[in-house]
Length: 281
Ligand SMILES: Nc1ncnc2c1ncn2[C@@H]1O[C@H](COP(=O)(O)OP(=O)(O)OP(=O)(O)O)[C@@H](O)[C@H]1O
Ligand SMILES: [Mg+2]
Image (cartoon, rainbow, N blue to C red; front, side):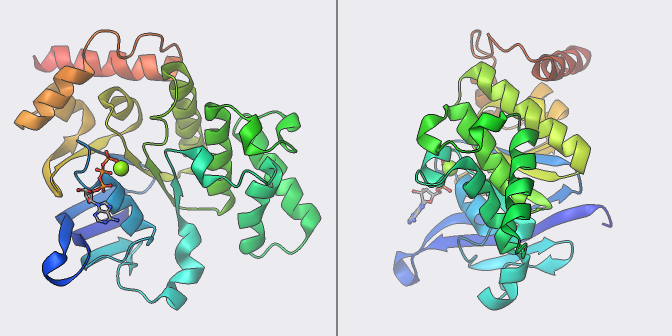
């Protein structure tokens, strides 16, 4: 398909080898349209992060293909992969663990700009400042270090750092899960704005169906390394087929889970999916 950015086919990822091998991802196939968002949901240990790590090639898949715009990253040698790595970037759940506490926000964001080949320190700093502004942090944030920021602010720095590589695909692994609900909604809204502006493609991993509903058009449900259900987010959340998805949905609709969420983006998305649910009920 011309409009597919990421096409994953028969992906298998094992930890360990031989008789000790554990198959964490077992023959998984999905695709993500350019400029769209696919969510992956599923219980703890089902293989979501393993897929994310395979996509950015922190892990080498056992078999299968990961085609980005027709180029298979799964089996590519490290040397060939190096110039392509910037195209797929990851935003982690724990921004604290993934940001160097000794560097300023500006240094953190400038680093990938330097790696991309920008030699001038001045231009690196200037571009980093623009990105830090883009993710909604004040100029005063430039010279501060990760320990001086809140969780939400750190996640914004993580997003700015990912954007600094000029990626086409952003893999967000529970990127907002550690945040308070209202801060989570703000970060989701930022990601949605950036996607609208830049046409960036997202793979969004979450265990929160409210988040999935707000951010994604398509969703894949995993269990024990395999896909058990997939479809358009509105359809799947309105009429979950698989027992596991029904259970996930019931727990997500429990009162109180999404209270306190103010930003209009999230509220609109939830209202739209409730309306779709009523229509199909
Ligand atoms: N480095 C590793 N070595 C061996 N097994 C691993 C390793 N990392 C993960 N696993 C196993 O692979 C399976 C999938 O793990 P993974 O981290 O992908 O799950 P997940 O869906 O991201 O879970 P969570 O929602 O808790 O983040 C689990 O059974 C886990 O114990
Ligand atoms: Mg995980």
